[in-house]
Each structure stands twice: as structure tokens, then as C-alpha cells.
Image (cartoon, rainbow, N blue to C red):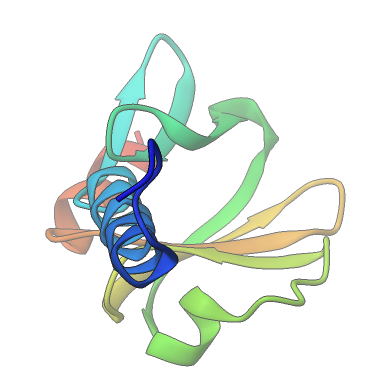
Length: 115
């Protein structure tokens, strides 16, 4: 053996580190309403999205498919955030854009947004 491990060992270790890192980043999805702002993020704060409550024109119940949440090419006007798909809240903003946020309790989130 030389000072560095053979690539047959290094490549699987690198792949394992990448998979575990992605798992840590996307392990959970959090939605929070605080101080006039709706915030959502993955894991420990990755891909954080914040929307002022005053910017929301309409909020309604919706569903978000797995494909919507995980598509790579997202149009700026239509975005979806979540982990696995299912119940969500669709938001239309005053700037014309829309987004869906997956929520474990969409009825509770709608109640808070409509206040």
C-alpha cells in the first residue's frame, strides 16, 4: 500500500459521505410562522425560504406531488418546497408568483396564515 488508499476503497467511501451528507441536509423540513414572516427550510437551515405575510395574497389547501417537490428545473414563478409530497398549502403572492409548501398539518398552517 502506498500513502493513499486505492481508488477501489476511496470511491465507495466518497459516495457514502455524499449520501450521508445529503441525508443530513434533507432529513427534515420545517415550516415556521413568526414575526410576520413565513419561513421554511430543510435540515439545519439549508435552502431557507422566507415570505412576508403581507406579501401573501391567497392561501388555500393543495397537494404537492413528489415530482413537483423534486424537479430540478424550477420556474421562478411556480415553486414547491417539501420532502415527500402530500398535503400542502398553495400560496399566491402579490408579485404574481406562487408556491406550495408541504406541511404536516396544512389546516393549522392555513388558520395561522388567514389571521
